[in-house]
Amino acid sequence: MNTSIDIKTRSIGKISLKKIKKITPGWLLLYTFMVLLVGFTALPLIYMISTAFKPIDELFLFPPRYFVKRPTLQNFYDLVITLGSSTVPFLRYVFNSIYTTAITVFLTVIVSSLGAYGLVKHKPPGSKVLFKFIIAALMFSPHVCQIPRYMVVNSMGLINSHWALIVTNIAVAYNFFLMKQFTEQFPNELLEAARIDGANEWRTFWKIVMPALTPAWSTLVVFSFISNWNDYFTTLIYITSQAQKTLPLALHTIAGGAAGTSIGRAGAVAASTFLMTVPTVIIFTAMQGKVMETMTHSGIKG
Amino acid sequence: MGKSISIFFKKHGTGYLFMLPFLILFTIFIIVPVFVALGTSFTNYNMLQTAQWIGLNNYKLLFLDDRIFLTALANTLVFACITGPIGYIMSFASAWVINQLKLRRAFALAFYAPSITSSIAMTVVWLYFFSSDRYGLINNVLINLGLIDSPILWNKDPNYIMPVIIIISVWMSMGTGFLVFLAGLQNINRVYYEAAAIDGVKNKFQELYYVTLPQMKPQLLFGAINSIVSSFSVFDIAVSVAGMPSPNYAGHTIVAHLYDYAFIRFQMGYASAIAMVLFLMTYILGQVVMKMLLTKEE
Image (tube, rainbow over all chains, first blue to last red; front, side, top):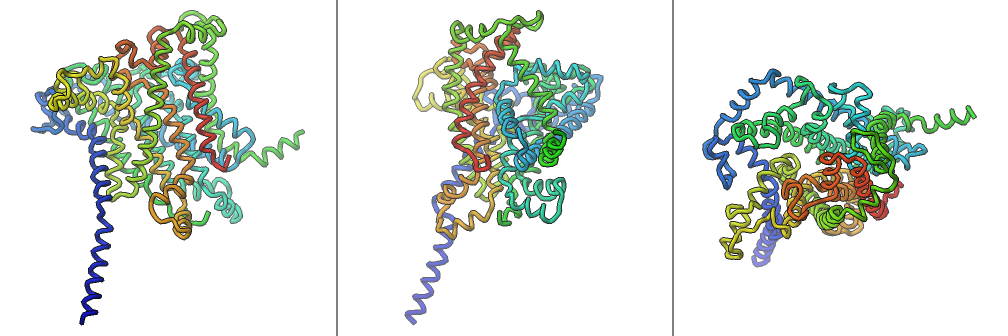
C-alpha cells in the first residue's frame, strides 16, 4: 500500500518536473525579452501599415499615434488620382520595376552561384587574386565609381535602356562573397561521389550543389530583391525617358523629393510607401522558409 | 607550348567557365571604374576640364590641411569601433536565439523589419523618439521623471549627435548579418551536433562554443567584413539625424566628406583620394579579421 503511493507521487513528481523543464523562468525571461526586442524593431513596419490608412487629420498629428483610429482608403484613392494625371499609366511603372528587378535578382543569383562554385571547388590558378579583388571592390566606396561607370554604360549605348539597370547590378561583389562563403561549407566528398557516379559538372552543380545551398541563395534573393526594388538612384542616373522609369523613382517624383515634403500629397505618399513595401514583405516571408529550412542533405556524412 | 596550353585548359577550363559570366561583368562594371577612380585620385579633376596630374597633392592636402577631414576621420573611427562590434554580436546572438524559438518566422520578420522599411524607420520612428522638443518620447519620459528641466536637443547639440547616430545605426544595421547567420545556422551538418552529443556536450552554450561557432566561420567572416564596411561607410543615417553640414561637424563622417567633394563641389580628384584612404583603412582591418577567421579551405 505504502509503496504504491510512493511510486505514484514519484511519477507525478517526474511529470511535473518535465513540465517545469519546458517553461523554466529562464525561458520565460528569454521569450519576454525577445518579444520586447522584436516589438521594438517592428515599430516602423507597424507604423507604416497604420499610416497608410490614416485620414488626413491623423497624418499630421504630433506626437504621432502608432495605431490608426478611423481607418480610411482615401490615401489610396488620392494616389490613383495623382498618378492618373500623369501621361504614363501607373501600371507601366509597376511593370518596369517588376521586370528589371526580377531579371536582375535571377541573374545575380545564378552568376554569383556559378562563379563561387568555380572558384571554391575548382580553384583554377588566379582564384586567390580574384578573391582579393572582390574583397577590395566590396570595400571601395561606390560613390566615386559612379561617374566612370556611367561612362562605361554610355559607351555601350545602354542609356535609357532597362539593360543599364540590369547589367550594372549583376556582378555585385557582396553577392559573390556571400555565395562563396556558403559554397565553402559544401562537403567535397559529396562532389567526388557524384563524379564517380558519372555526373558531369553542370548536372552536379544544378542537382546537388544548388539544392544543398538553398539557405544561401534564398538569403541572396532577399538581399538582392530589397536593394534592387528600392533602388531609385540607378534609374535616376541611367533612365531619362518617363515611360522607362521604375516605381521608386516615379513615387519619388510624386512625393516631391524627400518623403513628406509636399504636404498636400502626404496621404498619397503614405499609401505609396505601403504599396512599395508589400512586395518586399511578401518576398521575405516567401523566402524565409527556405532561409531557415534545415538541410536534410547535410545529414549525409560529409 | 600549344600542348601545355591545352593541358592547362583541360585541367582548369571548367572552373574558368563557371566563373566566366561573373568575371566579364565584374571587370567591366566594377574593376574598370575602380581603377579609373584610383587614377583620378592623383589628379585635379572638376568634371568640366580635362584632369591634370598633380601626383600626391590630394593626399597631402587631405592630411596636412584639411581639418574637417581629420574631424570626419575621428568621428568615423569612434562610430565604427562602437557600432561594428555591438551590431555584429547582437545580430549573431539574435539569430542564434530566434532560430531556437517557437514562432521563429514571425520573430525573424519583425527583427528584419528595419531593413525592409529603412526610410520609414529612419525618418518617422526615430524622429518621434529623439525629437528635440518636449513631445519627443525620450525627452518626455526624462522630463516626467524629473531628470531634466528642459528638452535635450538630440540632433543639434554636438555632444549628443554621435551617440544618437550610434544608437540608430546599431538598430538599423543588424538585418544583413542576422539573415546571413540565420541561413548559416541551417548550413551546419547535423552530424557534428550528434557527434558532439556523444562526446558529452551537454547544454546549448557548450554546443554553441564547440560546434556552431567553429562550423560557421565562413558566415562569421562575411558578417565581420559586412560590419566593417558598413560601419566605416556611415553616411545616410548621420545626415538624416544631424543634417549636412552638421553642427560643429559633430556628425561629419568620411563618406559625408567624400560626398561633399564629389557631388556638391565636383572635385572628383579630391573625392577619389578620400575614397582611397577609406579603402585602405577598411582593407587593412579586413585582412586582420580574415586572418582571425581563416577557414581550412584557404
